[in-house]
Image (cartoon, rainbow, N blue to C red; front, side, top):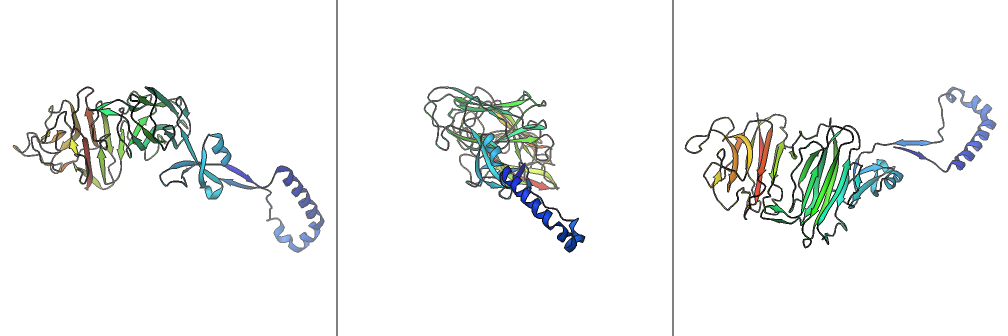
Length: 383
């Protein structure tokens, strides 16, 4: 963006006229005194500052993000200044909306509930749609970070309230509910410049107070940090934690069908998974009814399962019989992450790439408590 620094136009004109008179009166003497340097000197009437519309961090919070614009641009785009950027020549512009039927056409924007940060309880059931359009033709993905999401009612796995994102590819993330603060999600726009993503918040409960604050960031098709296509969650780093949606709410959800993908870090060839330590609630309960034992046989998890291809103790050597009925395990459900029929949780490893954790739950089965879902810690292992 370009800023023209100086006074008003008529002041500049007057100043220029005076400058020309002074220059005319002293030109001869200046030529005598400094003739050798005159040709290399120039005087600019305008100071021009250029800066990109880069992302910025708001002054009010280190976890709130905006885009660097001029103050005028920020106002035009419906945003509000929250700190400075570009060495003070720009403002960190925070753009938010809580209006149903609105269109978000800027990057690094937020959708929030009415009266945020206070919670919101709708007076009637229904839905609220917000459309996100591409900021440029080369955009492929939308990353959604649920900085706050709580109070979306769920009962035995079924969402009464729900949040959904739908693009134009026909392959969309699952609808989610419950508590998902700190989780993220990727949605695909589609190939054409006019493709958009519709965010729908459905109100099924008029008694539950809900809060949401969702950061929206668009990702170029050529960005090195773009998630692989159809990865609803994308994790980076040699170590990390993967959780089912609403794990924080203690309830596995129905109608989940998506992939968690993990970027293979340089110098690493394997990945090990185990139940998370120091977490509550139960870190692995993928069953319709309470059970303690793991279920890890092909076809043994009709209601819901995790798909992690070719797990064994080291990812290379087959599991032994009778400890396991299969040489390599690819499905996990039941009450523990481990070998089929055992209540003991163990660490399992795979060398199969890309590294992924697929999630499936059916649409109708009642998921009786404590069907909490899963929380797995992963560690990539060097080659």
